[in-house]
Length: 102
Image (cartoon, rainbow, N blue to C red):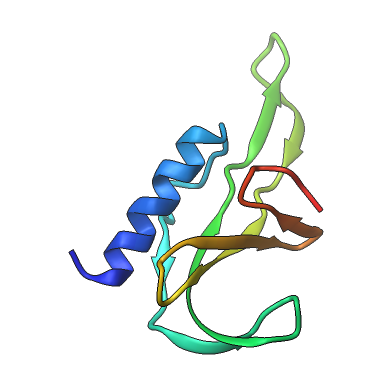
């Protein structure tokens, strides 16, 4: 299994473990290894996996939509050397490796 496949599989396991969801129709898209400036200001070679979270839709008894929250576009950053998840960037902050938000 190549490194890109490994980080995608690792992210799938993390998502399942942390009761998180992603839009399976769009899938998980891993870019080639690249040098990125991380949130701590340091540059590092990383793999970035982009994905959308699932839409949250609520219906009333008639089957009409009463609430719709569109999924967020997210980017999971993986260390290119160790293939470990560093953090997930979303439009309103970060999701830490332990599943907490910051």
